[in-house]
Image (cartoon, rainbow, N blue to C red; front, side):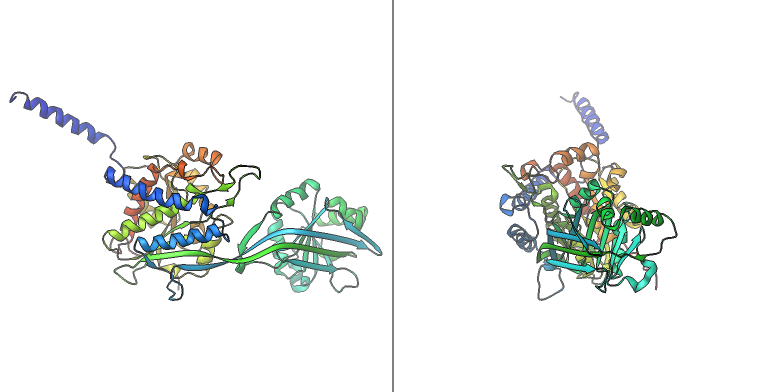
Amino acid sequence: MIRRVPSLLAALLASLMLAACVRAPVESMPLVDRDEAALRLTADINVLASDEKAGRQPGTAGARASFANIEKRMGEVGLVSGTNDPGSYWRLPVDLVSTEPQSAQLILGQGRRRVVVPDSDAAVYTPRRRALAIGGPGTGVPVVFVGYGDGSVLGDALAGAVAVMLADPGRDGARRDALFRQRTTAVLTVVPDAEALARVRAQEERPRLQLASEEQDTLAAYITDNAFANVIGARRWQGLKAEAGTDALAPLELNLSVSLEATSDRREFTSQNIIGMIPGSQPGSGAVLVLAHWDHLGECGPPDALDRICNGAADNASGIAMMLELARRLKAGPALGRDTYFLATTAEEPGLLGIRSFVKSPPLPLESIVAAFNLDMMAVAPAGSPVGFIGRGIDPQLDAAVLAAVTRSKREIGDQGLADSFLQRQDGWALVQAGVPAVLLSSTYGSRSILDPFIAARYHQPDDEADGIELGGAIDDLLLHEALIRQIGDPAKYPAPAKTGP
């Protein structure tokens, strides 16, 4: 026995040396604790991604049940109100407008001739329930041809006019917006052919959701080149187009009568951002913001499908579940110096509307937020996957903290080009534009071999269900965020960025 001890000791030492050469687990979390975290994440995802929530589309009963559940869970994990409004404990109202085109008519004329342009050659759209504009000789409303320009050379002279412009792909939206800012009554765009008009219809005839505060009172019409030439005269039209292709064209009034009418199905409603917080021990030292969007697409499967509900388990019940688990862990640990806010945003899917509303009317000064962490599509990758770093290069101090935390966790940064391609497609982008350092760290965006199969088979599809989530990478990311927030929440370890400007 005694003679065998050195042999056993040598074997033990060799085993320990071999173990040291193997990459350590992500952070230091016992397997039992990982399992418990997985159970809590799964429970929250199951609730939010259930059929009873019907896909969490803003303005629906399923959406209201979803943010009510988030309020309840914020209270259960120990958060307090983050609204800084005694009259509204968890909720930051977001006023929205939903519109869908219904009917339209375009009538053009010269002299006594009037032509009702068929739907195959024209389309008219408005966000209002009904809009009507009449212009031309004898109406007091001039019809002005601006060619490829935006009429800005006329200053205020376009106010009240009907503007006619030539389509110029890539510039049309900005030019049309410029004309409406000059208070034109309507804008008629001449597109090359029926194929171009079909592309307009595909874009404009989808239901649209927007912030009520950003709604524009517009009346926009489109007509094919041939249909316009048939009314104004082919030779006259060819001359106008030729002149528009030179620098010689000045906006000119057309001897043309125009009548445009459109209606839309319109609904105004209020959705909710939900916000809680953990007060810091050092008031006035700034704040850390954690955010995730709670909304999804509602029913988006084919009309004849047995299952039409897009449950949005990974996108983004997983982000909300991770936010709640982060809040629970941070609340249970040592107090942080800085306030930590937890924001569940509405209406991310139709255009980052909830976070844009937050930026317009924040419950805390945006400049007090030293760092923001967006959690979006967090339950796709297996454990040990590389980290997708969305927002890298925006704030050097935050970059350094993230890279150091990734190194400490024995992980690697993944495909940076892939991560960069998502910068403007997630809520953090609205914060970045407002000057708030914001990142999205997720193993979902670290590798195309992980992301591409999800995008192809489940993204924005009924198959994004709770039974398909992968929590290995999500728990890795949970621990990474916890370590980062504990560091950045300590003013001694992460000083507030120096203020610049007056």
